[in-house]
Each structure stands twice: as structure tokens, then as C-alpha cells.
Length: 292
Ligand SMILES: Cc1cc2nc3c(=O)[nH]c(=O)nc-3n(C[C@H](O)[C@H](O)[C@H](O)COP(=O)(O)OP(=O)(O)OC[C@H]3O[C@@H](n4cnc5c(N)ncnc54)[C@H](O)[C@@H]3O)c2cc1C
Image (cartoon, rainbow, N blue to C red; front, side):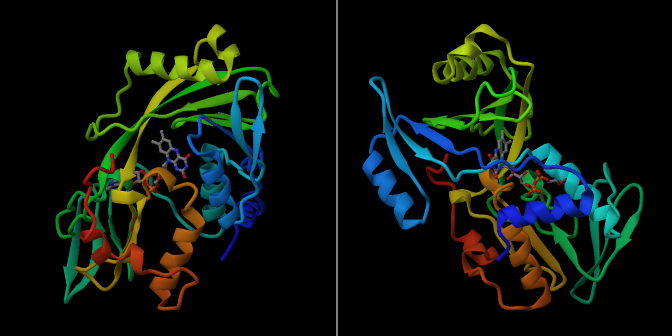
């Protein structure tokens, strides 16, 4: 299976564009059971050590890496085009047409796209039925609000994490602060109370943030799935339609492994990953329960 490092390096080489993959490490604060966390890391081959100061105990994970997702997507887009792919943006799939148990085309306002095989990867919208194509089970949009600060490069050189809040430094001095988990439908709006709460929590981890205002505050919709388990499988309605969705909080992290499994399924090849947990049928058996 391709490593994330190699996957990014390959996209960078194809596109000639830097995606800012950075093995900056992560420091985790506020752990109830640091020894159990250490054991978990050990059993998953992840280097970890506890650190103690007079104020704090934390867990240091030197191998944790990050990638600058907007740059990764820009590089990926360029690589796809260089390799001969065509990307149509702002082109909503409105309906699917089929004949003899096979999907024939996706209908949009601009055009009708015919193909031998289709992949449905419509993120938070994957649960919605497109006329002619059943929606993926148990996918729902989960909103996340984030803040962005701008400091001098080098002010923070590692990811900080405490009780679900993270600070991610970028090479140019930007610091991302996130995020919330909100079951708010397809509403991507932000609110001042959340902005203040995220800001105050971020300041506790990095006091200098208390003296500046965020340069950006936005929200995105995650393709939520129970237990954070994506669905990567053949669509039950049609043999030539595949689904790759429901990656919830980890779609960036899981991208190369998901794509590899998807391609193996499409080509009918055995995969390095066990496909069973990601089957449509398995997703039908999971429900939201108390996941949120
Ligand atoms: C605040 C926040 C923080 C996150 N942090 C992380 C993180 O640290 N690590 C991580 O790995 N992941 C993270 N994620 C999750 C990650 O962004 C998602 O899992 C990932 O983007 C899912 O990718 P996707 O391609 O399945 O869906 P999306 O990125 O949502 O893309 C789906 C696309 O399909 C399009 N679409 C929908 N319906 C139609 C239609 N009918 N016709 C045509 N197009 C359609 C949409 O417009 C959209 O462009 C975060 C998400 C949020 C919101």
C-alpha cells in the first residue's frame, strides 16, 4: 500500500506544485490515562513519549505529519489534468439514466456524461438520492467551524491538541484552530459564540493568540458516518457504479488508502485492505446511536 509520504511526493512531482507535507509532530495535553495512550501508540508502532513540566503532563508524538489540504487539492487537480483527466466544476449531477441494469449517464444542466463506470463521491450530499440513483445509507452532514490566525513563521512548529481542540501551524505562520462537530443539516453558517469559544480555548494552549484576532472563520460540512467508517463499495442498484464516501473526520488522511481500495474493487483485484468493513451492507448495519 502506498505510504502517505510517497503519495504526496508523487502528486507534487506530477503537478510541480508543493502540498506542504510536514512531519511536525503533535503534543497532546489533558490525557486522562497517559499510560494507556502510550501502550496504544506502542501497539500501533507509533513513537510516543510522555513529557512533564511543573504545569502539565503531555504526550509527544514526533511522527505525526500534516498536509496543507487546499494546496494538496490544487496540486492533485493539476496532476489529474496533466495526466489527461478533465475536471468539470459547478456541474451538479441532477439525475442518472440507466438501461438493462447498468447506469448509462449522469445528467447535468450543462451536459449528459456517459461512461462505462461511475464513482459516486458526493461527500456530505451522498446520502441524498439523485433521481435514478439511491442515496448512500446513514451519511449526514456534520458541520465543523474553524479559525485561522496569522503569526510570524516559526511561532509554533508542532501541532497542539487538547480535548478535541487542535492548533495546526503552517510553514508561513498561519495557525489553524478547529473545530466543532455540529449536526446542523446543510447549513454552512458560522456564529460569533463559537468563534469566541474556539478563540478562548486556543489561547489557553497558545497564549499569544489572545492578543490577535483570527483572519478567517469558516465552516465546512463533513460526510458524517456512524463510527467514522467510510463506504467504499459497488452500488447495489448498478454493477458499474461505485461509492466512495462517508469519510467523516478523516477524508484527507484516508484518501490514498480509500482510492487504492476503490480501484482494486473496480478492477476486480484482491486488495491489501480488507473490504468488508466498508461494504454498503455493513453500513446498513450501523446507526448513529450515540456517535455524535
Ligand atoms: C472543519 C473540518 C475539519 C476537518 N479536518 C480534517 C482532518 O484534520 N483530517 C482529515 O482527514 N479530514 C478532515 N476533515 C474531513 C474531510 O474534509 C472530509 O472527510 C473530506 O473532505 C471528504 O471528502 P469527499 O471528497 O468525500 O467529500 P467533499 O470534500 O465534501 O467533496 C464532495 C464534493 O461533491 C460535490 N457534490 C455533492 N453533490 C453533488 C452532485 N449532485 N453533483 C455534483 N457534485 C456534487 C460537492 O459539491 C463537493 O465538492 C475535516 C472537515 C471539516 C469540515
